[in-house]
Length: 265
Image 1 (cartoon, rainbow, N blue to C red):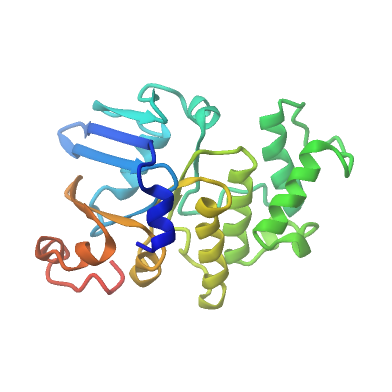
Image 2 (image 1 turned 180 degrees about the vertical axis):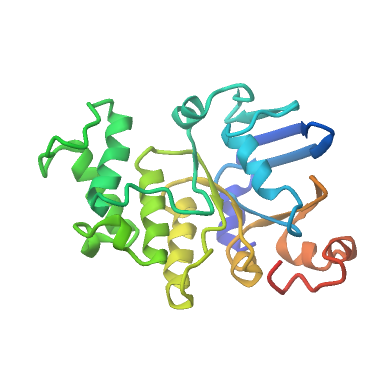
């Protein structure tokens, strides 16, 4: 953890807390005894072998799936039984492994619509917005922040994958989230576009005071970005520590069946 990051998260209140979380489907125990606490402003990476339960954990936290037992607290508020929309209003945002955009609309329109929901104005795909209305103005600001101003009028479906990921983040920011869940943000992104996307994610904390929980299989990228790493194995948290400490943990190494965690997992 860098000195600047340490100062940012030192003594910070807990932004997201998961306690004794479990998910059982039929006779299968998918998650069990998951305990996880993330400080405000922290970037936490979640790693683990395929099938460890990483995306399932995201699904439960974001409300896509309901836990069998346990609790989820966002900034001190119990959201365990809240619907997805209520969690979003409480400050929880999420991206998915596959892009979820209005592909037929322009880049600017995607962000404008996301902002309209927050402002409470009428959501319309047919009404042409004024260029200086509140939603459009904020959308332009967010596109500038993620480096997409020059693509504002491009159809979202025509963007390269790296730009789609940036657009998803701009749409998240339009909702003023406190905690952001990023599920494999680098998946499918060309290597040349990775550095810019990494910087966009880094600024979620530094510029927007967001707390970030992310799953990412590109280990080298993740370790250079996060403050702490949580390792999942067989549906529970095996270890949580600073990146160097986690990488040196022999139990973590064995969880990858002898594979070096410097490789993609």
